[in-house]
Amino acid sequence: MDLASSGTIKTFVIQEYLPDDIEVPQPLAIIDVPQADGSGEPTRVYGLLTETELDEISVGCTVDVRFRELFDEGARPINSFKFSVPREDKR
Image 1 (cartoon, rainbow, N blue to C red):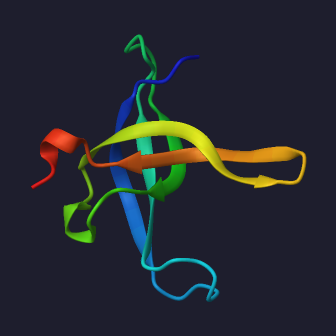
Image 2: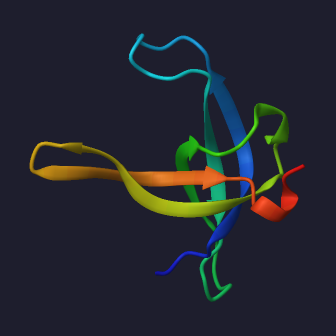
């Protein structure tokens, strides 16, 4: 199954209290991502919002979806979803 390159925020949280070596605030969201061919139900995924101002985040907002490396833990990279408000939607 291939996923579309954009999805819709279903819910989100802004993490403010994390260990000192992790940048805050850190917005995380649950996103519904449709299948690329438009068939079936969307897939619900969880990940980090990046390159986005906090006031741009709201339930129902469309975001770009990327699957990329979060960090490298030894011999194996750790991958996850990252989201951002599309550039043309930014103020």
